[in-house]
Length: 550
Image 1 (tube, rainbow, N blue to C red):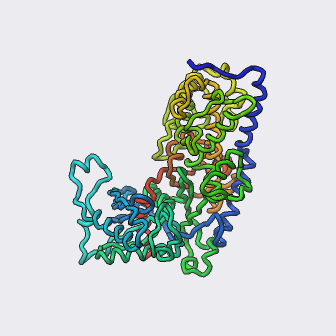
Image 2 (cartoon, rainbow, N blue to C red):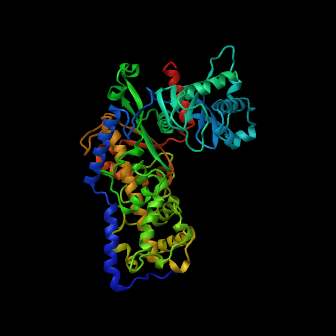
Image 3 (cartoon, rainbow, N blue to C red):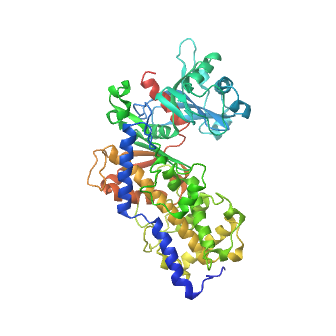
């Protein structure tokens, strides 16, 4: 059994105020969330009106979404790092599809050589994928996504070229659904004679050189792909959003509202178009985001200071680092340390040494076996371990999603169940943070649990602001509530580890969404997983290109 506390009675009052001050910095009251969402809407308008804004609001030239009735076989090519991936998606017409895929390694020589050699390799990989023999029945039984090769169905004399969607995870200036100039290379790529050229043409020229019966018809972003993937399985989709290592959103906008298109034929045609928000760059000036010293330290030490501000507040890449900064400040507190007896570890001292997955594990232990305060709609296809539990317990009063400071610091006032949870959390801390067992008390475990909840709760609430912005922008809601949508279901497709796995992230997001747009709207929002936007989504983008006559 761990010691309960290492704090003298004379200092408890002062230390409670320290924790209270930290908590106040992370709290987001309703009026603050309203202000953030209002600023979000203003930035949406600026990005739709002009080029060059941090909230880029990039027109994708995707002018429709699938409804699940479509059939056909489409390819996807996903290039974004050390490996490239080729996928074959067979649409079955009943909101279902099968997927076959293969990864191919991209060597350093290809990354830094001539662009023609790189794209020839991409074409060769597609060729190898298409000519791979049909999987055996044994393999098919163990892999529900396996299927026959599309090459078996192609008659070069009778059938048109097989359409392919390209997910190209590098900066491009997209001017049409099937056109986009390479702006720069990242992630260790520096292939020569690619900058300024149309990436779709570079790939198609390679297909032609290899005499492949394949046509690249669409250039796609993975967030747009998430929207299309969810649309196919759900029969429609308003918003695709990523809440994982990074964050972004893409939604269906009226073309007339994309004013920066000017006289572009796409705008003259009217209708709808999917817009890629790039909302990770929201409020780079930190005008409305609730910045703390822990956020400032993270930003200052990042590879992109003063950029991607919103992403640094809410994405899985950064939440662990924010929490690490907070914990180190408590360890280093003077004249008396407030955590771990003033001891740290090599892991905690390491930049990005605390993974967000550790916060998730701690929160999962703390929330295990509890009955939710409010029943909320889950994420279809998600795996929140807490949402899936059905063990009832009388809920305890909470403030802003977590117990008030006076309670969590007073270990003696905890119930036996909570003390047992803190024992398990203490074990997680010792193991995951590589601390000495004797330096971690139950009080320390309570503090780390509290810090984890602070960081994640703020992230979920800010995520709700982004979702609310899309609902208001598209006319399905009014900020503050008071609108009853015509639609029975407002479908949102999501991807990412936070929304899929982090305990209560969806519940926290929905609670703030309900406050922002009203219960009538929130209860009609159906959030479901839209897996593999860079693969299945790219293939579905190829489908949309064919629909648009490309």
